[in-house]
Length: 246
Length: 368
Image (cartoon, each protein chain N blue to C red):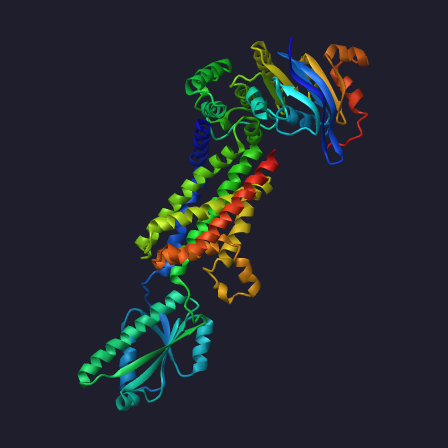
């Protein structure tokens, strides 16, 4: 196993406020890494640094082998990203969305076509290629959104609360897609508020007040805190938080 | 480069999918021009006027009946005092008054010269010019006819008085004004809304995480608007040439060049607005209120800038449309060349450069 995300005392300060304080962790290739924390705990800041959107104040981090200070362009080529906000264009068709995202990653036209077919088949959306995205049910949009985020074959995909507002059945199906992507060798870095989803992860880190308060597999975390489920583990850690959510 | 092309194609899809906006984009200039076109229309019929005949002789009666016979005028009533005339004007029911002084025919006979006073309501300058021209025409006709009959030239001199707006600013002011207004609105609104929409949708984040350059995002966002605005420009120019009899007298190339400068300036303003606005509505309101008012008030096409308080005059200097308006008037209406507008063009280019640089820098800072 080789780590694809390595951080060492990674810190982000906004003036006096330390949003993310000395984060040190590694994510292995092909792992599903859950990134938990209450609102305002510093998750988004951390994730933005890892995606090359935000320059860290101090510390080190390498994503897919590239440095977050100097090689952000290369990082951007190696990662996929799906945000909590739904991130496809409503007024474009399914196929046009895929073509667009493939296009801005510089994929060749034949490759985009091939990937589009593959993706539509996997999602069983062959008949919907020419449907406007706004006409799809939310669950389908979310699945499509995920598939589009890895259409360019990234090493790592960052998912920022990808399943907000979806019913449990669709969520389960969504996770099937994630597993499928992992089978193909993609590393998944996911933030979530759903504790059942935390159970699906190989390892979970829980952030409290800008620091990583716990990091291990769900089973070991539960054992460590003597809890039956991740919900209790999370609550045990998060209730001591001093920061208010923003 | 192909990435950029993909992006621009997507932007065009957005525009063409949104039929309502599309209709507004091209409907706005057409509606404006047609609207102003009617206001500018040369054909004025049945304008209500009053006549004050203090002389009541053969000549004045003949003239009055000539005026009455033309289908340009309806004589509302005959008045006998200047106070009554003033009152009619204030009521707004009449547009013009024709006053024959006492001893009109006598003067004409003995001095071969008489003066008829024509007072017009110039708060509508187009109408005032047109109706006074008609009256002059009628009087001149009478001069010629009676002069031939008498064997000697007679001279009735119409003496014009423009009420409320002696300078008669108006007609050709509107088309350049509409051009500035439409381009300003379309560019700032379209740009700011298009960018804020991506922020609202959450797609902006995806774009920023992608290797696609910020500068490309901006170019791709501006390209369709630039094109649409140029199309709009030509629609306005064609409409005003065909319907309003205001063809481009100067160089079209120069006009397009200066318009592109102005459009780029407006696009940069749109970009700046999009940085501040969080929702599409905010962006739209911002461009409507923030752009339309200064454009209407401080450009000089509705209200003459020279008559404004000093502070407003200074303020108007930073309104880009003011300079564009001057350029258009000089090039389109007066047919002047670059040597006449280089100063305004330079100012506009400077504003364009400044605003574009600022918005570019702020755009990057804000998003990263």
